[in-house]
Every structure is written in structure tokens, then in C-alpha cells.
Image (cartoon, helix red, strand yellow):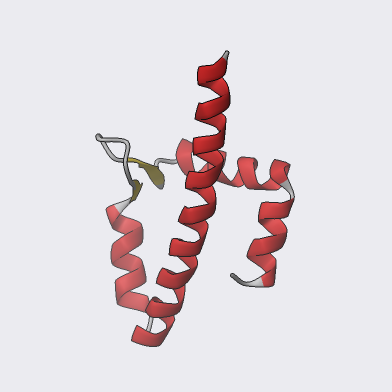
Length: 84
């Protein structure tokens, strides 16, 4: 993961504010089954049209890395919530 992204994850406030903005504008979400993330179709189309294949592969790798971190955080939150 790039240094800029790693710094964002290290600062929880920035991380959650960023997720909140993406969620608020419906650019990200969770699937109906709640087992995967959803990225708005318009964002997907723009990325496909504007990025070279090498850039797309790089971003996909970044998204996979971010997703792993997000799901780890969500799992921890849910585990703590269920213990209450």
C-alpha cells in the first residue's frame, strides 16, 4: 500500500471521515448479503474509461489491500459490539 494511504489508515479520524463521505454520497456501500463492498457504477465506468490497464491493475491491488484493512476493522468492531 502506498505511503499516503498507509498514513490515512494510521489516522483513524481521517480514515472514518473519508469512509463517511464516500458512504454519504453513495459512492461505496455493502452488498445486500453484507459480504462484500460495492463501488458505484459511475465510478467504475469512469475508472475503466480513463485508466490504462497498468494503472487499473495498480488501483485494483490498492483496493484489495484497503478492503482487507476495512474488513479487519469491521470484524473487530462487530466482535466488540456482540460482546456488549
